[in-house]
Amino acid sequence: MNDGLLDELVDALRCLPGVGPKSAQRMALHLLQRDRKGATRLGDVMTRAMQSVRHCEQCRIFTEHALCSWCSDDSRDVSQLCVVENPADVLAIEKSTDYRGRFFLLLGHLSPLDGVGPKDLGLDLLEARLNIGEVKELTLATNQSVEGQATARYITTLATDRNVEVLQIARGIPIGSELEFADSNTLSVAFDQRTPV
Image (cartoon, rainbow, N blue to C red; front, side, top):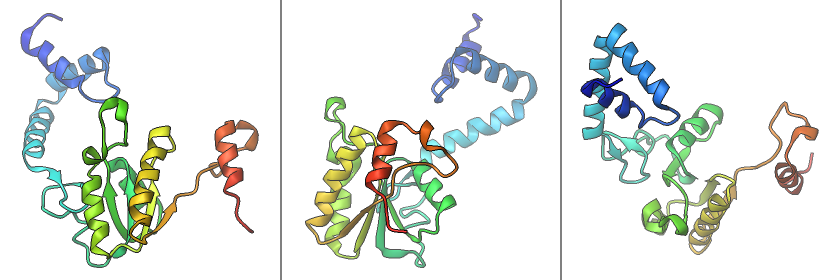
């Protein structure tokens, strides 16, 4: 295509994860041809969200308010804190577990090569929160990548220096899978973390 605004729309849609040139073109044409009302609503909601959604002052989860729904929910246990890397991790834990503590969102992991340090992850905010003394148990739900593990070690030091118990979610073989198909690292971690029956 070679038509100013249409090309600009296709290019704008490519900012979404996993959307290449053909997918972006297909979306743009669909919106223009079949759902202009939906496209207008999408544009309006995106504009409002970009202007109003920010980070919770306590946990860094996205919200329109000073405190998110998890931090402002008095029924949640303030002595338990779960540290995650991504907003989707919070939603997955909420959907799949009975965890009733609070969260802290890193929005990434330590990566000195990429210039991502402790302040970029809000670890100064986490440290201040731990200094208050309410948190007694911190659960690390960071990814198993090298960077995720380095981040977990850094946070473990912050917590243990303040006498906060640190737990890490279990790693290993997924339910319903077979051992022969597990990669060696997963099998090694699962074997190292075996528990009494």
